[in-house]
Length: 245
Image (cartoon, one colour):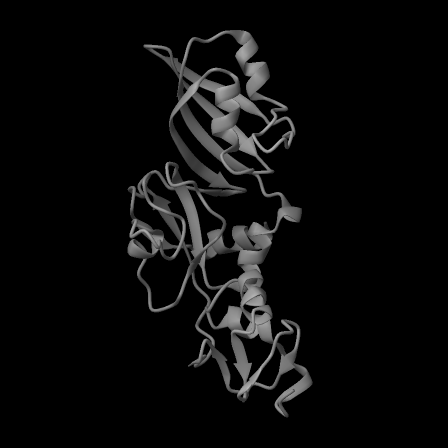
């Protein structure tokens, strides 16, 4: 190990996270894969500590220094991927949010879904908002079509068996309003957030999802004046809410 290593220095995965390279989880994966060097030596232990003057590189590119921490909220439109790149050339959130800092999505929204998506280079915040153990409540408003009966609400509230066999926990579901042509506006509040959980749940109730929008993460709510595709920095009050989640 390099002579730059020291027990009191910062952990390597935190160095990458604070520099905006990746979330702490992804940074740990980069390190374990042997893609990170410190003073010319490959280091595969994410928790290794190094002095501030160490030369850290990822895939041969030197990490210049820590960026200022920045967190923004995006009103993600449907049809946009919650990722920084797409090998098939699809539109991603990186095409919408352009900042000097390298921000990464905090969690994800399905391509066909829309609404509140946070992006940040604050590794601690990203970890706190995405780690399954925290189970932050996320609120979704869903337009679904199909003939309605009271027993459908029982199905929607779960539990529901997912395609992989996982059985979801019951979730709070409310009917906000029913429109013409058997279209219903529903509100789901999820803590598990399994991939496409709401869509599979609606399918189990013989309902077709027309649109799915995330409107809140904990106490953070999507502003009504933030248009699809638009983004802005979190206010100090919103940052305090995010930090408390």
